[in-house]
Image 1 (cartoon, rainbow, N blue to C red):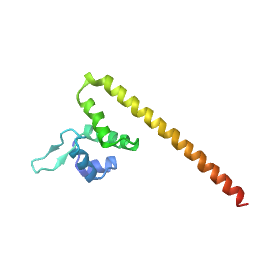
Image 2: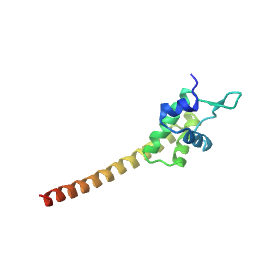
Image 3: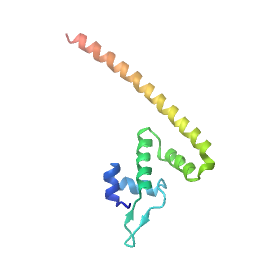
Image 4: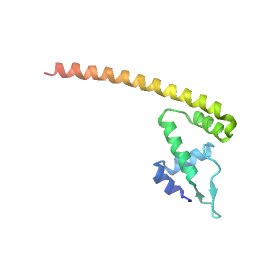
Length: 119
């Protein structure tokens, strides 16, 4: 199936300008174009954009995302490198979660303190 940039934007909740930016940064494989020059996207492009969104939410930079896709695009010879890379990103995310949980604890303590004081 082929999708327009508007369709992809609606499906992925990524703005058309961000999609073009990701394409410009080399995060997308070569995007096909109609004879009129209009881009059309495949299911694989949509999946890739969805994964980009997930990686960005996890705090990865464009450079780090590019590195992930670089190894992926190189094929099965890079599986070990990808596993190591994703394990490291996973560890970083877990550390961020732990830091955020610590922040929540402090905020909860402040809320409790202020609620007691407000009585």
